[in-house]
Image (tube, rainbow, N blue to C red; front, side, top):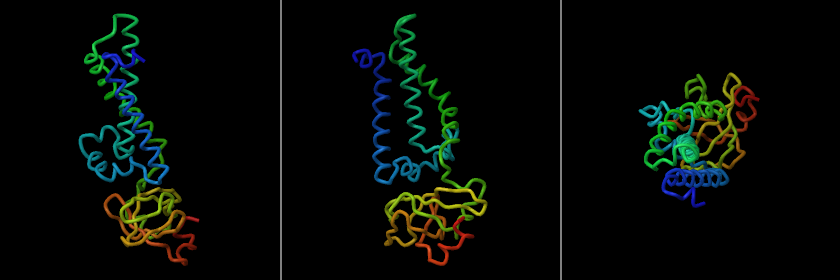
Length: 210
């Protein structure tokens, strides 16, 4: 324990502790039906993905996941570096080791995040325009849907591809429970607005992908 808390390894130990905290918050949020990574993306992930940080694959991978990847690479890379250095040339000063681990992190984050993007469920609409999901019927998978809480639905497009977009009720006063069928009625930024699906549409195979 003293080894991990020593000054040369302290930056990497702190990174590991921050990572543990973020993972805990993400897991707890998921249990309550509201992923912190989705919330952060809604608050600013889209702007960052279109800006200078797009090379980190933001937009394909949630911002919080990218931060976690960077923390893993920094902590693991730094500790491995110091372990090797201690057995060869002698343990490095914390600042020097942090600089080396930081360069490794920046180089590897796009590679790792790109690999992660290939296994994450797609939240967007493949090559379709956002408007192409309007009029489709989906099922609430993360809810209940309320004006102040972003939920998710499972919906199939006209080509049979399944999507999991973020949604809110079109009526701010409405609450739609998990498992309910909803009709997508409009796009609002990076979210969709939905209403309860009328019975006739809920049973329509052309609209719900059945």
